[in-house]
Amino acid sequence: MSIALVLLPDFLLIAVGALLARLPAFDATFWAGAERLVYFVLFPALLFRSLATGAGALDDSLPLVATGLAFTGAGIALSFAARYLLRLPKGDFAACFQCGFRFNTYLALAVAQRLQGPRGLAAITLLVGVLVPVVNFAAVGILARHGGARLWPALARNPLVLACVAGLAWAALRHPLPDIADRVLGALGGASLALGLLIVGAALKFEGGLPRPAIAYWTALKLVAVPACALVAGHALGLPGRELQIALIMAAVPTAPSAYVLATQMGGRGQPVALLVTVGTLLAAVTLPLWLALAS
Image 1 (cartoon, rainbow, N blue to C red):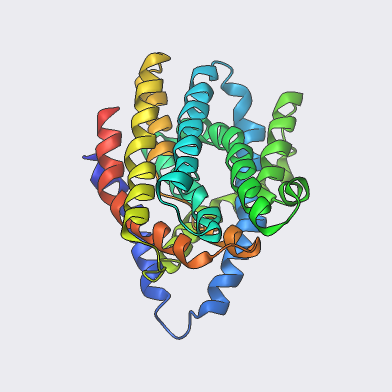
Image 2: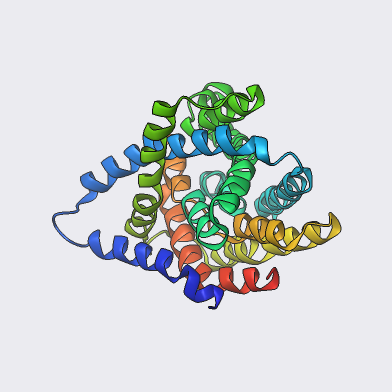
């Protein structure tokens, strides 16, 4: 079966979310509540449990982590270069800066689990645990500088950062989760993937007021340049095929819809971010299978 067909259910869930968002029964209030539920409860539960129970089994994962840091660092540097190349208003740049390196974790986890099962989910969750603090530090830092907010308090309140730090700390203790906690967290985390993909679809928007060169730059950066960096770094570090595929999944997924939430909450313009997320998500249906085919 081709990779495109394997990924088809996930992109169909995104399409279902886009359709539901156009029905009166599923209005903006519904989706705002659903996103808060996923962002503050379900998704942190998935991250914590996966890291707490799976990270310890990946002691040989240093090359994978190094690859993740390499392509993320490249994405941050190239995204910052847009400040001088595109000469956007400061508010637009601060909001869109994150679109060159932040990743759609919902989609990444769903794809990794579909392609490689529990082992793939554990590997990509470890990568998420390392990279979520990095990308949030960069994104929040630029937005805080623009909006006058304080960086460290904003990071300390981020539920994904907290879940990753807690999960990695638990894994370091080498203690199994209590059975009841494991079951509850598993049920909450299991609900996050499908609902997260529906939310991605509901968030698709085509209005943003962003110049075409900026749209082309950040879209090409996220869907072409960053995965290319992952491929080069992965080969240089000797990643085996399955781990290289995990790195490419993380690098090639589009920007997270939560980038819009972060931008609006920290005083940036949300509309350009929503436009970049929409364009990237639609094009990733073509580019993501192509990148993954290179690692198969």
